[in-house]
Length: 436
Image (tube, rainbow, N blue to C red; front, side):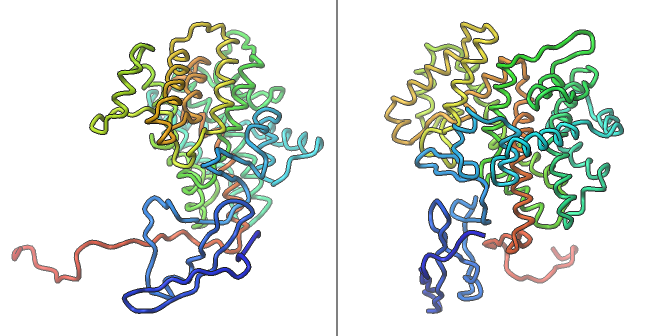
């Protein structure tokens, strides 16, 4: 474990009501702001902290992902996201997130093979899909089926066995894309397409999504690279809502399949994983470039419910480093598909230009984020809007697993149990119903 106290630095906190004081250590990580260790706050002063949304609370120690929102920096194990998106591939990044270092050539070949040969799912899992309505949201299906994996893979649910934890990790990284593609095929009434071991991770996913038995489906290298890059950009993002959900579920000792299912459920929320779908709906609502000023004006009006989706971020107060990569990828995909005059892209480019020059947005640091372009890319490739969050879940699975494994190896880990500020009724006596 890294750390720790910054040369004995402490902060003195005093309860003005009681006059009691407590010295709290100041901890320093390898990067980022210092952290006040408040674990002794209650025992020393008899008070808790109050931090809705955990805006100023560090819930764990981690070596996986680092974000500097003010500078627009995102690092996986120290490597800039731009370098990984340009030079690496998703499974190599997955190895990095899981093990902490980039693999050697031999390590990578073994890792790719191990993941590839886990992509098939138990045949009886296919029967689960028959219990869902054809029009069920694919995230609802994915939640249920991923959670049900614990009923099929009993040999990898013992969280105290390091080998079983790793087998479960491989199974989840390998099988979630298969299950996601099955959810899509089921909604169309098309037959499931089995995974192929001769294809890369991204190629295999596209093949399972769009191939049909009646004809050959040739995977475009440009499109598979775009999906691979999208997966890299979404693989992990520090202690966001879904990752925190996975850690909280895991802190109780729940099996990994249940924890990842919980993460998928959290990701499903429109404030978290549904942002790129919301961007697409916004662009369609605006409709044309000449209507942008009207909607910019509405976005500035505090009494208008309209909001510019895809701008600003809870963490980033600068340009989202992932957005630059997505912007370039967007052009590559549209060129590959022969889409020369895509109205949504033209609209997005002009909206971005205006927002970056407008004093209102610049002062508030409302820069484009990764969701701004990813929705356009996925739409152009043929993914329906209701599947966008599923794509996010496929990519984020490896980050969830890396965080879960790190938590399992953390000797300071305890079951998550937040406190509250109670504002309800005080003690009162029960009154029989006939006397009320």
